[in-house]
Image: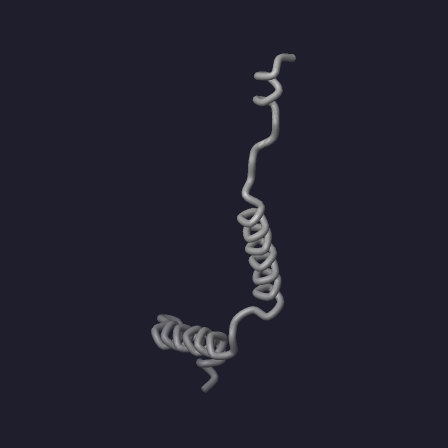
Length: 74
């Protein structure tokens, strides 16, 4: 192999500071993903979604053409 071929086959030059920062960012992103899966949504968001779901269900029930059997008994 000539000297020119050896230079072409050497590894890519990287900035160690950038590589260290990138590795740190990836570790933080992984930890954040694990925490999101572990703890889920905040209580306020859960309450808001439950209220919206209840409001939508009531709206649909109020507009039924054929009442369910429990509504007929009343």
